[in-house]
Amino acid sequence: MRLAAIGVGNRTGKYLRYVHAHPEEVSLSAIVEPDPVRREACRKSFSLPEAVCFATAEDFFAAEDLCDAVLIGSPDKDHYSQALRAIRKGLHVLLEKPVAQTYAQCEEIAAEARQHRVKVGVCYVMRFIPVYRKVKELLDNGAAGRITGVFHQEFVGIDRMLHTYVRGYWNKASESNPSFLSKCCHDVDALLWMTGLHVTDVRSTGGLEWYRPENAPEGSTDRCITCPVEASCAYSAVDMYLRRGVWTDNFPIPENQTKAQVLAEEMAHGRYGRCAFRCGNDVFDRQVVTMKTEEGALLTVEMNTFTRREGRRTVINGTRGEVIIDGWTIEVRDHRSNEVQRYDFSDDAALPLHANADLAVVGDFLAAVREPDRQPAIPIADALESHRICFVAG
Image (cartoon, rainbow, N blue to C red; front, side, top):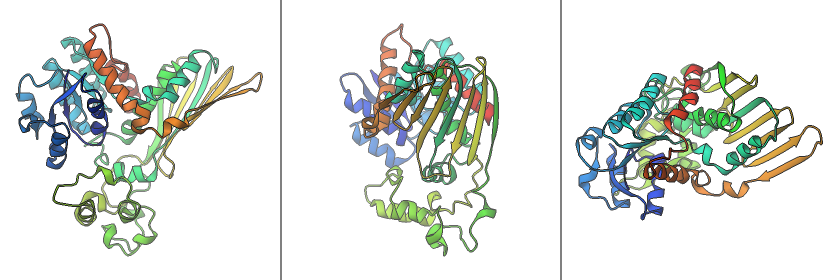
């Protein structure tokens, strides 16, 4: 099977490892990437001729017979138009989340997929992570009884928040999406998938409270590299990228430069060297969303960005017991016997690519394309509900 990729940044790079691992099953036949450094790196990695490496999606779609399916991992604002063009060319689509920038656009993509009889899968990797698959099995077998409530915490982490939603390309809803949709839509999907609950009402509380100009430390400047109070600031780009070296693998490195040179230039002139309080970002830095369900249960999802912790913690309460997922471990507590069953998936935590769930998403999608009667595990129709809830939450 011939797979093309639109946008070959961080997430797409992880999905494309499936192609490297399964050359007998799929080949990368074309790429679209506006950044010349990333485009050339991907071209060399897959030994592609320059003729099938495009700087724009327009040039790619103008060409004929380049692929059987397309992986779309471009910026959020481009998903809708690129997905429609691919569908109308008769191409199957694996689409990174979020699907689009409005719920109406999500519905239109689903409708077009039905009309043109192509398969559109969504990269909701949480459904493939072993710990969550085990939770679904436990709940399906009645471990909690009738579910009465769910409390889910998404620990975004300060570094991820700064890199992605404050200084990064997801810092303006108009250019990407609201932060809750961008970060938590697959959390909402996973909760609904695991519990089988159906949401009827959505309430949201949140806002952009901290990363604002009026909260900048006294005496601070526009750039961390020249800031006199940088050494005492918890949000310093210098500390994050230069001293601790976190999130630096996402910067493309030209052949004639070193990573140190690229980072120095970024700190002096790029978007990632800016003061966190002066980035002009407008997405929420905290949010709590509460949902009522047809079954009478309450679901609460908290997006917590003011923590060094990253990961998730979920408590599922029921009439028979409760199921607690804390990172990579599960506890099932029985109300009557007080017995506790524990399941430890800590070994999976050391595995790359979300415990290989990123690869499983791609493998499942390709299998669905090969088999006429099979749908992807997360078809676009199934992803609509989680997107609807997140768009309502704002």
